[in-house]
Image (cartoon, rainbow, N blue to C red):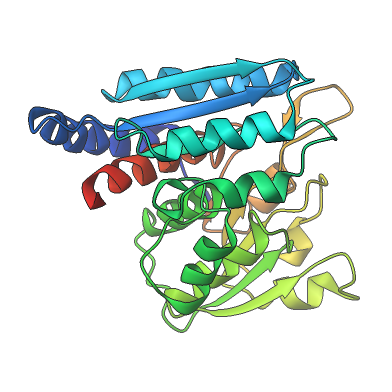
Length: 281
């Protein structure tokens, strides 16, 4: 029997309904959740991303601010603007869209954002909170992946999970979140000599390397849950993930499609972090 497709759009809509209800309660108390989004430069993909984020804020009743700057904005000016937003009581979350122009140090920018408003969960302190199990903001994509896995009704305790990828934004925090759920976790990457040896024994596989057909049917344990974080194009220009979807779905029990799987969840978890920031204040 083909794997059940995990509908990220449907789950995202459900979670956004819950977020909107929480935002309504806060707004009634005079504390409408607020997100500031900063875009520097004219990167076309980034423009689409920030537009979608601002629209999502409006859909759930948030206050949002979109600030666009020319690519020649100085690093000092950007840091000064972040400092002002840190002090703004109407703003509970700050997001600086990446990538930034080359003359701006992204690490310095991320670290300038108040930890209380780091709704992307990218700062060193946020990463430390995740590592040590303290309450904090989780990076949105792996946070969304965990919600997708939870939606299958699977108890991760004692399960073997393999994460393919070791980025600071997805791979590493994904592994830590799985550990928190009591899974036994293996991290694989470009220097792993025999990837299939690890994935064939996994109950859960999260593919996040940005290379199509990284995971094929012969590499998957029957009944495994497969989460595809990849975003690539096939030979015909069609959007696809890191997983050979048609092949793997014949082996796995659950699988996320691309598009319509992880993608919708990333912005949703950004909204989740922002409403949590407002509630914590």
